[in-house]
Amino acid sequence: MSVQRDEKKMWAALDQFFLRVLGEKTGWAVMQESREQAAAFLAAAQETSPSRLAVMQSTILPRTAVYTVLKRRGLDAEKLMEKYIREVQGPVMHDRYAGLEWIPHFFSIFRWAFRRKTASSDAWDSTFAAEGDSFDLTIRKCLWHDTCAACGCPEVCRFFCECDNYSFGDLKKVGFRRTQTLGTGGDCCDFHFYQK
Image (cartoon, rainbow, N blue to C red; front, side, top):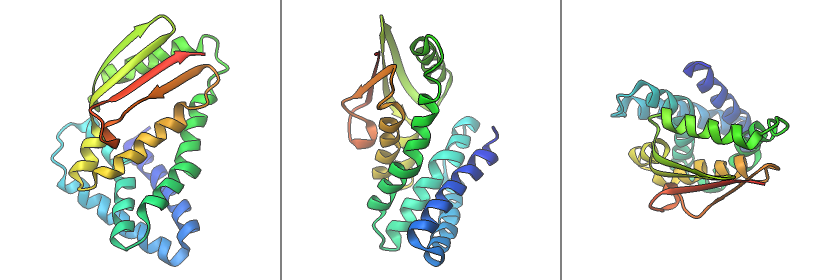
């Protein structure tokens, strides 16, 4: 999928939610200002990697900009973003994985895909260790955390971390636990996955 298509899809989901929750007049004003804020964040970015810029533009900056605008307007940005994650983004992310669990040997494929994605992407500085029916992924540097901090709102990163809880929580064939994340003030993100 192209960056523009991913970005358009993200904005559409945000628009639909915030127009419903804030009402049409306030919702449109917030979303227009959020698009302008995201463009300003992108223009100010010191990032040179095309792949990292693509992730920032399509995934990170839209939600970071909405949070920033909500906060600037005196709205309860924390509560509204939690509601968005719980009602929109979280279920979408969970369904992405849960919908594939019917595949035979799902855990092995899941582990292979996770290793491949994290090893081939410059979005994270991480280590991967597999043993038997489990694997650990430890992330020491994360594009989501770095971007939120660069935008002046490191607290927003916790909403991205929360998406992981929805994505991997309650899967039938994969167990997931984590004791800390960079986005919640930890030294790392310590993912542990195991076959159920």
